Length: 127
Image 1 (spheres, rainbow, N blue to C red):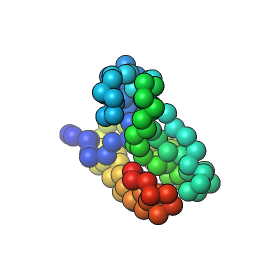
Image 2: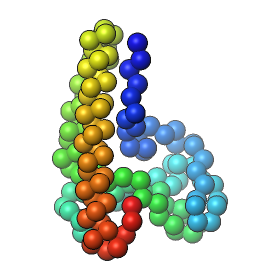
Image 3: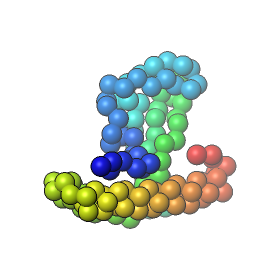
Image 4: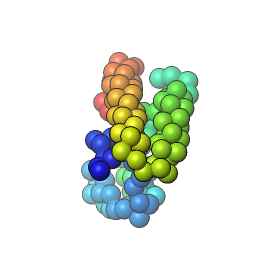
């Protein structure tokens, strides 16, 4: 039975650290370990984090995702439950895992749209 879904957790949680990524500005290649970073996005909201890829050659920043404190807590609950369900491989558990992943995907997408709009209004950024 397939337990996959379209959900992809934030890249920093799943991408192998030695994966090579090309900077869209200067075209140099660096590992994800070198490029991946998070920083507080406090001007937008207290407790909000922005995931970025930052090129050490040219300093180009590529936005990846927004993560609020609330979404981080919800993600921990959802993936904690998924971890428990995955230990017992039953069709019902596989279905529940799929549902939980879809729930998180929806919450994640809503949050990305919300903060993208806020960021664009605040400082003309596009994410």
